[in-house]
Image (tube, rainbow, N blue to C red):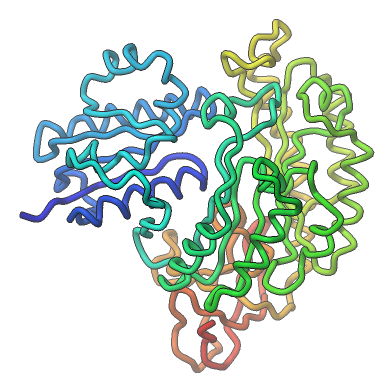
Length: 444
């Protein structure tokens, strides 16, 4: 009898990797993926619980999917950050969500087969190598470590995912080889603290060892770094960015620029140190620089916001995201009495984003007329007859995309994972429109 599985992944790319690992394990025991939860014999929800808002979203999804247990579905499994965050109150979690058959923390995803089928797999296997993508795609995330040793005052990640544990290099290589065999052309390296990879297992510049090894894999054309924190960003790594298959693209979450805010956040970095690193990064030809910021941290003043906006205009980040500060229980910042009202936090976020949108629109407009190599991702969900892709300066799912026009091209339509040469003819604040140039798509 066919066993149908429906799986939902919430949250960050690191959680998505865990979801694909669970999918791969269940495929091996005979489960087939269905997009329709009404046809599912089992449903797996991989949750996010980084912020209170994500906790609420996870619970809403659990309650919505619990309705399917009135029909064909016999098992509802909840995995990921929600069970991890409330592991100490697991009895309360079970009683408040009795529809859930099993909870698995982020450290228990290798137990998904037992949770669904009652089968105990080999405990010594490398379950990351069982990972399976749900569909053909041009890119895949490669999670090189789990957890974080930093203790930023606003962050719940260490309490949810624990201390940093770097994966063995051989495991990463084998997983990347499997992704390449599945047609993936771009590997996106992710971790809680990417530049710290290997420090817990005695490696120096471990991230460079990962990059060098993946670069040798046939089929992989692009390697991208996300979450490269300012600490541990060595001179050797600076020299490596933009060389070989490592794209000249760096995502470096900085959170703020005001020194007293950086100190209160326990970022262990000064504004001068951040600026020196950014200046050196800007010296790399063609570099695209992304960061993320927090608006409305306790103790932040309007002068701090003005300083932040002036700094953004000075640095001119290519990509920038702003989170409204969330007071998370159990964090040092969350327990402070000087919380800023939500409407003020939101207004500050909007001010920062308005400044960034002007910068982004200008920088994107500068690309009009350029010829870019674009990696095809597939058809746009907004325009189902229009192919989309990304040039090297656009990370998947967080940046914009290139809408591809074949109006002036007497050539076959490209497929997912192909590279095409494109002339950019139009730009918005985040997206580009380009004409595919005559010539066959390049299958990397």
